[in-house]
Image (cartoon, rainbow, N blue to C red; front, side, top):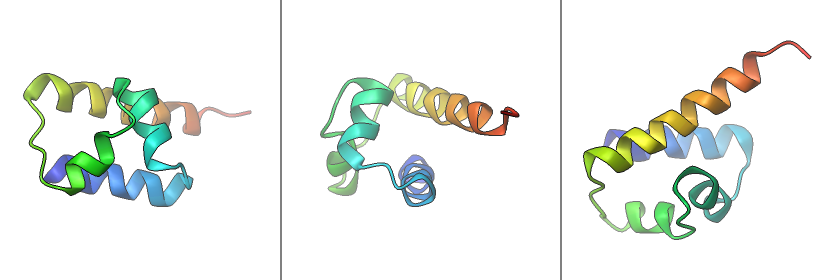
Length: 64
């Protein structure tokens, strides 16, 4: 599952707890745990997750 790999890389890089990621990205603190256990998200959920990841990356690249 490609989206899980993307999420795992983000969590490792940012040291964000999985429950916080789920809450912020899709309002589901169990998201990452469920993905790790085989949950298959629908296309709309994948789009929300990737939009969150893209927004975080854009914010990271902004000069301070």
